[in-house]
Image 1: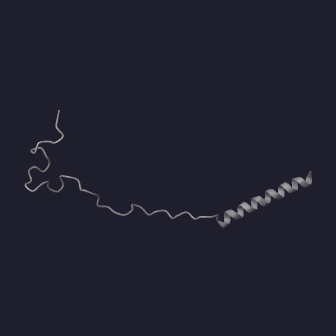
Image 2: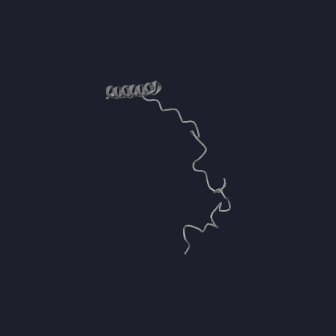
Length: 73
């Protein structure tokens, strides 16, 4: 069974008199900052005028069709 703490001769940077040389250990934190890509624009709230006009036209056509069917009967 091996011990989790290796002997001082097998540790990285053990040869260096002042500790671990650069490149032996990973950096403490990343060197990048900010966002990686631009954020999409926020969605608009409410109904668009074209969508509302289309719904009103379709509702009017349905009402006209129902009234026309009632008159024919």
